[in-house]
Image: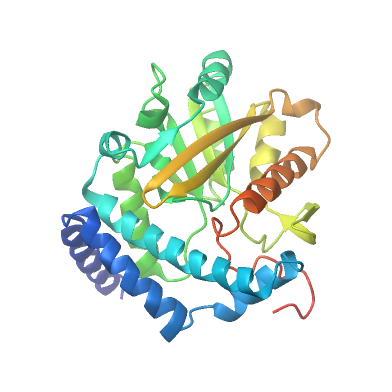
Length: 303
């Protein structure tokens, strides 16, 4: 069974790699078709998207809600196709083509040079898959892929989990560290004397051990707090990184310092700051977030 899984994942990955050799404009044609398919034919998670939007933007007129929904499906289709296209592309090419830029890289440079280890908390906004090109986007002397580690939540499908790990490892030039969320703490402890930037995607629904609740987009929301807990335990500065979708194929990464001394903060304080910043960013660009996930399972009978 394991051998069959590996064969299937390698076959699918090889197919995606061949597709990645096509020009980006061709991938956007694919994206237009996928958008139509997901939105109008399959109606992929339309009920979840509709419930999430209507529960958080209750005062938005019906016509605007429908427009945001259409924009969301166009956005998520672009993310899928851009991520496939980027498999065979270097992060330098993403910068050269103006697809990904880091607006205020000096924020990261200052804390990295001062403390050596940094926690980055990141939501599913923009094309979050491009974050593994951070060493190129940041351009900090001495900060390379060997100094990058990213935590991820394994997918339920082992085949697709293999594929996405392979794609992300390629984006990290097979030199960064991609670790499942249940292994990241041990890794940080074993390498606490190394200089490294740790990336935590921090807007998933926490299936267990959620210790932080905030009001987010007007709803009581539980948060994964592993990044904050590690930062407080090991005294690592914490940054929030948001990826804004300015236009099709144009993403701006923006950094905000949440805490330089997290050990002095109260439990949950950093995640509350993170929640408030993400709340504002989503309100400024509503479709630019992963609305098709069941983010509020803690609210009884919502879905």
